Picture 1 (spheres, rainbow, N blue to C red):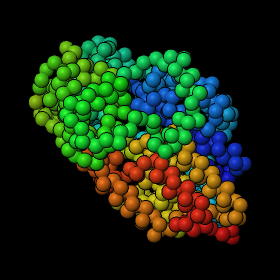
Picture 2 (picture 1 turned 135 degrees about the vertical axis):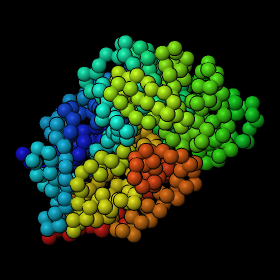
Picture 3 (picture 1 turned 90 degrees about the vertical axis):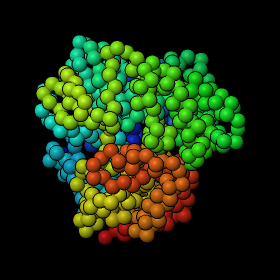
Length: 531
């Protein structure tokens, strides 16, 4: 039986670990429930070949402890999954966090008790925990989704998902392997699988823009210099999310030659920094097209077969409107004799059989099926828990037409339930660790404020929530983000409402808004009085 606590935290990834540490720091009791057998969150589950972070290692790390950031040595520009997983395990051990975490336990329900003004949380182990506050650190990309393919249940071989990769993976040597999906995880794993499989068939529904990673080992001298500048670097990151080379120049204000040279410079440097070559790439479709055209030409140069090259060129949505991918030798992989690209727009899958996948044009023999088909993003982890607020109102019913909250942090009728990097916040559009630390620090300050004022809790007002939802929608509408069927809008989940979920206004502006709300004694919220 887990003891009753001031704060119950769901999830032990980057968010849950820092939330636990912070709660201890401010002197409130806290426990964590984690469904996995270890810490790590998404980096526990995402063990597929080639799994890496697309934010540079020196930035994709905690800033709350200078000792921690000085002592940890990263080995590569973009860390692989094992290294990030090792880092999070180190954090858990260094700050003695494991003793407050219940592993292998899944939260199945959370109900607000109006009489006792607390959350009563049920688990699959039969636990019934009472907590004044609930912090949902359950992850923005943590609920993997298998594709809805006719007959997939009849497939005789292993069916693997990149977001829930098993420890005991079959040997790909000599095997016919299929990968469905060409988003970030597909882009990372396809080149790795191609090197080992006898034959690889890639089933592509929508091509993605892939910029080169240009990954490389980190020299000790370079890393030491970065660490010496961490205070300044972290301060900048809190305003922009990730330290990129942001341009103030409109794309069409310079000559085609100058524009081409800038794109080439960033392409050679590698990474998502490419998207920031000009300030209007995500707001002006003509400017965006210049960047898209550049990438199309790089694809045509990399891929020998012109027909395959054209299939790999994204042409029906703006560059960056779907999450841009960072890869290594992705396009070049399609030059291999053992790799076949199937365009599902031309020849859709008809059925999955015992040892094959049949499209409208051919039958492909398959031994192993890998689904790189993404997640029920931003809301999925919350929706799989039966969450009920004041008067028994269901969060799933309230959010049935799209997520509704205030500041991306709390939802009306659900007192004392905080959400970390969920919908309505910058979340997946910035360095997640920066967003996590901002959220946890704000939540900690809020809890201290409630304790200092003798309040039993806090809950957003419906009118404040309505205004915030409208603001999130308005911000998105001013960009090109809404012009693609992306998981940002829930378009990858059948039946999910099409609502652009992240706040696109930037973490600096978002942070200022949240700080102002706290400084002004939490307008838009109501406090609960102790009974």
